[in-house]
Image (cartoon, rainbow, N blue to C red):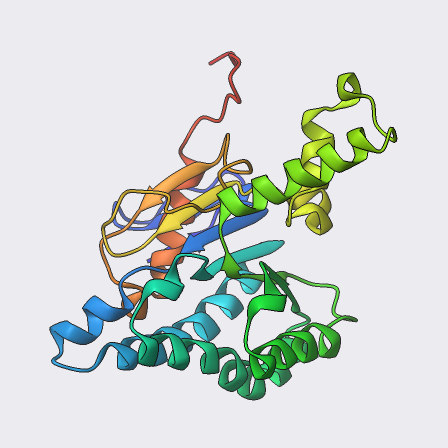
Length: 259
């Protein structure tokens, strides 16, 4: 059970977890792991897990928006996922079409803007159209940004950024001594997220404890919460539990703070 923290109040019971509305992570990023294993446990095809996972995305997106999260980044498809069986990849490429077709009206109703980062030009044409239509349809929304990492890989992203900077140096437009952390950040796919480019909180479902080539530059000082349930089992309550854990961490960003 969760409630919002009010000044001079304490939980009414030991089991009540109290969230501080003034300490909600501005940017939450989730590695949505375990769709296939969720399906296999139920003797269902893996694609059934992906379908249920899509429904979880809808639920968690609205829950995060209601919490006051500014950016929710979801790792939807990596540059390595093309190695999966062709039938599964084809199904995954159709999911954005179905997802945005059914969910964009709810996103607009909740003032949520869609952003997609990744190598979109390498996606099937139908998937590209669904992505660009969703971003265009929600462009006037001013609330939470629902940011999908689709055909995204962090090493490729960093390589692309370095290549772009190197070309500027080679063209005589940039002095190598002028290269800074901020400049590199401006060449990454999260640049359009502005002050919220770096996640405050990373969540990974299904019990795995690895990064899987996700936001390697941006997560330098993120807090990590690894959770056992598979993504199709993830609930708003589990999201709140992760936020509660985050709120009880001490973030020092490499420095020291007085106790």
